[in-house]
Length: 600
Image (tube, rainbow, N blue to C red; front, side, top):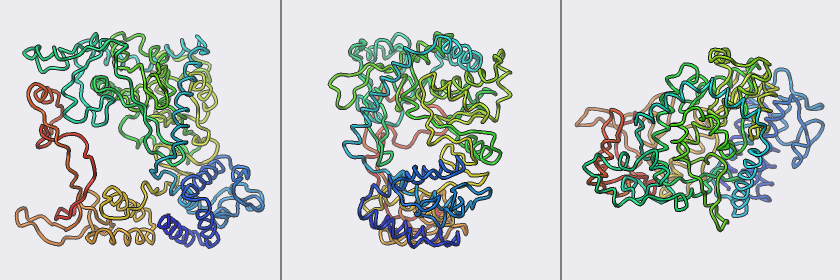
């Protein structure tokens, strides 16, 4: 924690100098409270201050009850007061008409710096997260029971108008056998990794009805005899989703569901079809994002500058998408509906529960269909709310065009016109979702979406520490993260703090050259370009000496029919990686090795 405090002190002094104020007492406060309260002060308490500050920007004034754990005087907390007095009136706490943008960025930087650091939560917090998962499942069931049939009918009608053409094309792909499955890189419930996923030994019976094993598990009919080794699982014997936690913040872990190999295999194929057809559709391609966050960020900037667009965030978004809504959305497309249902896991194994639970939600994070399906459900819910505010029904698909560049969904990051916030919020809640008021903004000039934050058109995004500082070069992941932190601080103009981190890095790795961001070498990024230490005798290209990722992919050999199947399933023009039939899967550990490589 000492190194974290040293970094915070450096940033506080640097930000104070840039904002023409003093941070001496702030540094003392952080040091004293961190010594008393421990690491959670930096990762939780400070972050809570930052969130309350963002809420004050949105509301236009400071509410001191939101800073209850901090001393105050007049209308402002004493902590970071030198910065706050350039943003809010010190007596009334009211936001200035033209606050200091540098001070806004500084307060966010100093309070949210450690908010996303990846640290394991306490067992109590993990248990609380699993309890929350079960409670969320209960909420989904209750929402299904109390949902007004009129709302569900409106949802079906809007989804048919808005999504119908795209869903029909995906439906056609399934009907004509154009779905090309693939295996994802992640973990699976049956613990198969890499090439082992192509040696499928189980296949759910209900999946077999839509995607027959003979068509998707063997290269061609000559290998039909291999199907005798496949165990067709009846519904009661299916492998359940494995629910686990992964690091998110020290306050709350992230809950994900690890899918069985067979389900993930076909989910990936349907996902690819959805992505392709959405991207080719003139309307939906401008309203739903799957891979590119930039449009959402641009709209957030516009909303902060013009005040016309709101940014909404949903709590537990994935886990609150009811399967009932998905069935309603796909009801006019029987082949797609059947395929999505066949690839949906219905059971989950939750730590602390003796028996598996039946899922009412569509899917948790971890399903390949979770992201695209939830985006379409959210978009439909949004337009149900907009239609009710307009008091005029949408009759044709062209009616939605007036909202191009005003409505956009990327995961649970939502952009909508400010005039429809109330009606859209009511609509989302009617369909069982929860709008996160602490991360949703529409009244002031602060907006946040897809990792970017803006105030009045100014980018006030910050640098965040993602991992604890490495203690030695053996912590390769920590070294890589620390190098990234140094470079982010450099690009943010926080050069003194970047130099501080650079000094720590040089104690771990003695070769730390200037390189381009595209170089494989762990090095310093600079606006001045890269350095050249020598020229390659073979290619006559510039070289530098530095540390490069040399993680070894696990040995995982594949041959015979499974290898042939892998060949047939490959898509894209690039060749497969060399040795992909001998090694596959994610490395068990990250390692770095000193060698000469290109500086760009």
